[in-house]
Length: 194
Image (cartoon, rainbow, N blue to C red; front, side):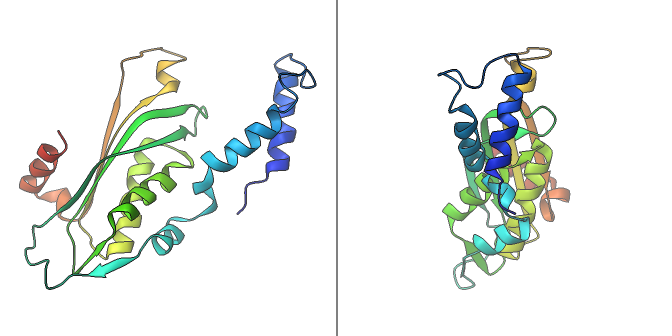
């Protein structure tokens, strides 16, 4: 599904009118086009399903000779992403995503993990769903059931409007496979994420 920039331009112009401003004044004349181009960029992940992302970024390397312990873990920490809350279309910022998985005969390129996190976040989202979507895509791309995603973020719907609690941060964890039940593995993951 392609993002309809013409429709966005039309609606942004209507929002400017609804706000009581003149969309034809110099400072706003190009705003609908700028917003449409920005939305095309920041919502690029909406053009793909999770399965398509797994296929797009699912390049793996067979490593059965080098991955020999069932508790070996790949952990990529503090991937910077941002997203927009689907409830208010408000920015989720200073977002750090950490992804862990236990390889099952193959590994995925480290940059692919960051690309998956970035594209999943570039949708109208909930932080909880971002974690679940990333876990799903990593599971599908790597063939491993054992995936964990930890996300920390500020939400402008809490910091800049409404309750205005500027220091608040939301932390979510998504645990799949052995990460769900193995307390030792969970503790190891949390120590690595400090």
